[in-house]
Image (tube, rainbow over all chains, first blue to last red; front, side, top):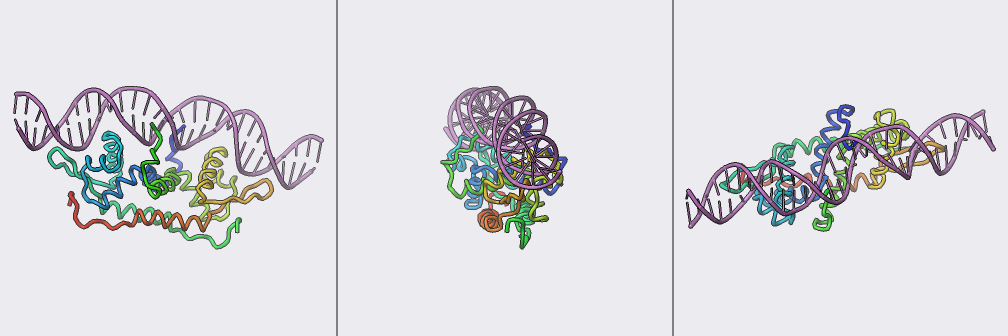
Length: 110
Length: 110
DNA sequence: GTTTTTAATCGTAACATTGCGATTAAATAA
DNA sequence: TTATTTAATCGCAATGTTACGATTAAAAAC
């Protein structure tokens, strides 16, 4: 059915999967890495750097912005993007809670 | 076109996005959390716990297994799953490299 | 050997994602 | 005002994902 049944999962599980989905495409990973390197970066620069068409980059930026991971500043005809530092930190806390769980000493597969 | 153009991205970017994609569905997050809690867990227990149909859980388990994040041990007619500790740690290193980048002090949006 | 149990696989319907050409919107420059 | 520049949005084709009923496979119990 292509749609996750979000109502059967916890808020935490849904939140983790939403952030993870944002990182689930190499173009968005590349965009974020670029914004860490050159903060802020114009949409056009990202198009050049990453090599996808302008509407495609714009769409990826929209998703990242929707999740609050980046913000964009209009400067004349350009838009300058950068990492939303505060929200990035919040996201990291949520992801770390999931990733840094204690590994059980002994499992069935030991 | 629905398919990421992997050849235009770095191996690192592709690897990050593959792991992220694994966490990009709440059911897989729930499965992994359950395996952290009760290691190891039988496929049937996961079906009961999570509430999706058996073929659906089996499919999610297959993806997690393909990425090396879990392993399954056949015990009679059952299969006992658990976190692949070593690979989980490796994955965490890769994800941390991406998530823990230094935030620039000043961006265009400051 | 037959039945039961457990999980993988198959097939397919419903839906989501990705990519981009074409267009639009909005600011700037001429 | 009329280009020009830059990026968002629209529309659509191609592909991927998710879910599950039906079936199969394999081991265990009887």
